[in-house]
Length: 170
Image (cartoon, rainbow, N blue to C red; front, side, top):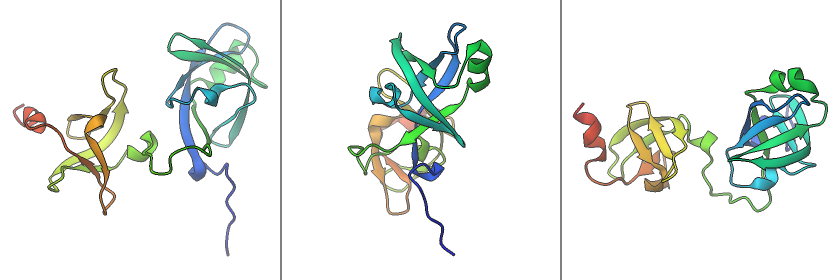
């Protein structure tokens, strides 16, 4: 038995942001984007969280985030009810098929070019200089040292000498 898959199946969606908190009393929310594509919060855009679909009716930049109004979300109580939700969207036609997405990095094993195991990615931490891979070993690896995936699907990082040794000294 085969099952067809639509473009809005969770497996085909990319994480693009998170609803941080309500803003005001009319139902607006503050959205933090996890993408550089600001068009993800343009009016008329459809975003998804689980089995819920949200249509953006208005948005405007606010500090380093966005204030967004969704169709059908009214009042502070409505905004509070959706706070904390992770937002996803369909891939754009111009999205790089070889790009690595944050949600794909989580849970990935990390190795050095010689195959030395360095742990598993628990999260990606935002950092002005370079986002950081947070490993289960406690190591923080700047994303700029990520070379890609090897044949086994492991993330290969080529870090400066001594980066992992600092952790071993503790």
